[in-house]
Length: 104
Image (cartoon, rainbow, N blue to C red):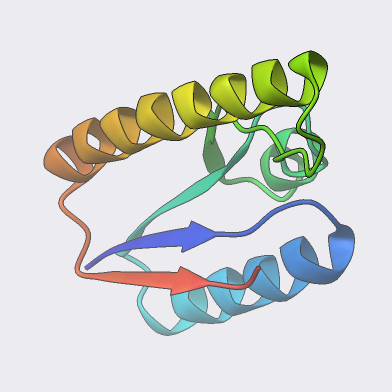
């Protein structure tokens, strides 16, 4: 069984995902587990410390401002989303998950 966990941002999202992954690994010792998170966030550090592989994708927030800086930020955010979708497709083709579990 191949499982992907998506989590990110805070330990409040990451730690529950790790706990579920630990329970799944205990019940199904042969299962393969991969975490997907965001670049530059806590999951880059916490997930490997727990003994799991993590793939981090680009991400960026949207701006509500309609000034030039806000528009640039939103264009950048759209580019990040497109890059992340492309990366996810590649990850899914390679890993072939049986289930995806999201915790935030």
